[in-house]
Image 1 (cartoon, rainbow, N blue to C red):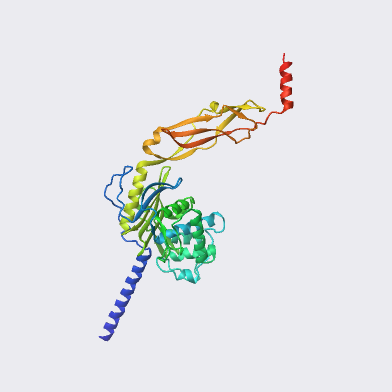
Image 2: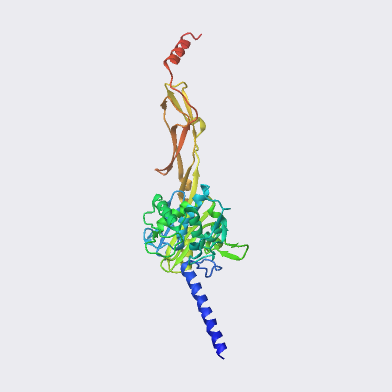
Length: 404
């Protein structure tokens, strides 16, 4: 009888321990409840100027090429970021890879510090070897704190040194409401940012195409299939065109999400912070993205000017005419209703003083919507024309006099 009682006590203890472990994971980031259920929200008017009824504490929708804000709610309010902190960590990791200071094939040995990280993790053991590629999978897909710290230490030597780099990069990007205290997003006094700043660093991360190799994956494995990764960003599975980026959940931050999606040439970033539950962040981000794709498009405007019109007279030059060429196109974020109202107006100087160097701007194609100037296409000189010299002028005069 005593043995049965003892066994019952042990079973209760194990069960309680398991529940405690799960609770810690959920409070940190591992909010994987109902990942198989589609994202639903009540139909809302998506026209420009409407209230999208985002119930989270703050929200923003931004276009990453121009950093244009298309919608916002309390976007500058300072709040805890949870694991979307890792977006800045990933910016620095991607920069290190681009600069050849780190490779995806490189093997990283987990430190004691990395192996003891709490919250969401892949249970790295001290001394365990793992490639940068696998650690990136764990960081982006599984939001693993231990993997993030291992990468941070590989780049900067310590998490503290890496966090200094994070804050320096935030300052460079103009993230005025941001202070990082760690590279994972675990709650810590003074570890704060804003919805706007998260959107800015998300746009910066999207400049690195490699991130989408990881952020668009729904499920993957590590350790030869022994460890399974499931992306906590439900949009990857349920929203067309999703390209990332990162979820975050802590008791202090609530449920957060930075979501990116691309359709055609238009890419958008939606950030939700301080949602009371997971569905609120996903439905809010979905509503923001739907609003953006319904009303805006990224258009690449090419010059429609005729080649024979791209010319100016040359004063005091060795040639009398300089021809130009439209060297660049203009990318514009337009309201869909304005896309058919784009007008181009050619502006060329009647006469240009020599010398003229190849590549000099000799005119513009001005792009208008109505009477609003929204962009310029530069017209560049196609060749060099030197200033005429006295001797050359004299020869021309003599040839003119004696011309039969």
